[in-house]
Image 1 (cartoon, rainbow, N blue to C red):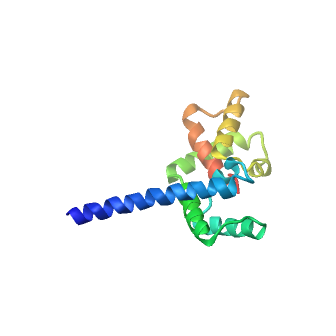
Image 2 (cartoon, rainbow, N blue to C red):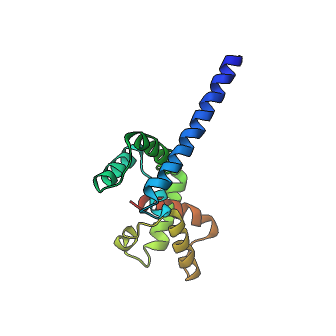
Image 3 (tube, rainbow, N blue to C red):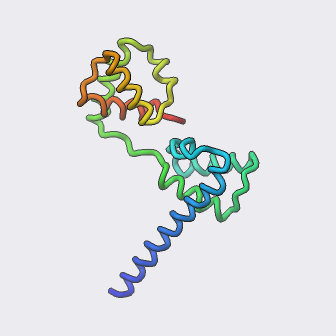
Length: 153
C-alpha cells in the first residue's frame, strides 16, 4: 500500500513538473513572438500542435527536441479541442441559428467570422440587444453551435 501511494505521489509530481515545464517553454519560446491569446485560442490536437511547432521551427523558432516534446504535450492537454456538444444542445443551437441568425445574415458571412467562444458570445449578445429573437435559454446552445462550427482555425 505504501509503495502504491508513493508511486502515485511521484506520478502526480512528475505531471505537475511536466505541466509547469510546458508552460515555461511556451512562455520562453512562443510568447516571445506571439500574444498568448493566439496560442490559447487554437484548440488543436496533439497532431495539430506538432505540425504547428514544426512550422514555427522551420520559420526559425529555437526549440530543442526535449522542449518540443514537453511543449506539444502541454499545448494539446491545455489548449486542445473541446469535446463535441451534446446532441440535444447542438440541435437546439442549430435551430436557433437557422431561425434567428439566417433571418438577417447569409450563411457565408457567419462562416467567415471564425470567432472564439467569447467572440461568439459577444456577437450573439450584441445581436440580442439589436433585436435578434434569441431567448436567454437559447443563447448558450447557439453560442456553442457557432463556436464549434465557426471557431478559430
